[in-house]
Length: 220
Image 1 (cartoon, rainbow, N blue to C red):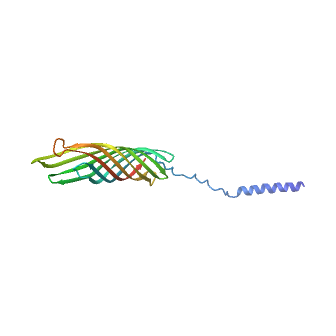
Image 2: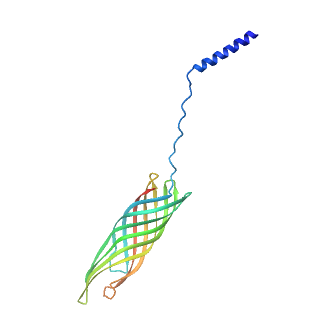
């Protein structure tokens, strides 16, 4: 019996020694996976925009204007769940101009600089953002005329800054965590202005501006 126990003990020690000499089969530890940061609409962004504008003047001898728009954008968003809230400001140069010719002369109306400062409220569906917006709008305008009344020639030019409100809506899509693109429509009813006071061509008109724009933003 003692012989059997001794033989078993010797066999166990020999097997352990042989196993210790064998090469290890352990695999190297895989590095932890690296995940891209989750997308959020929150943060500061800057961008460029461009599009088309239509300017309507009511009760006016001036013709309505159409033309292109190009400018820049600055904004900031906060996101809570799927709700996105923020503020946006932009300034555009408008190529809106129209000349109207009539029996006793002609006039020209231009809308040049356009700015809006707006709040935005949106609903995010993954990387798409649907939003409404509203706030302040201002336009830099120039009016000129050259006419004859009662055998007397009248000629002049006036520049006005017109202020009003703006409302609209749009959709924005994030192609990457930093690059987004948008398309929007804005409607801006402006204040009334009186031109050519004290002349036969005096008029008081109201300006209504509509803008269709697309933009490309970089989000920090």
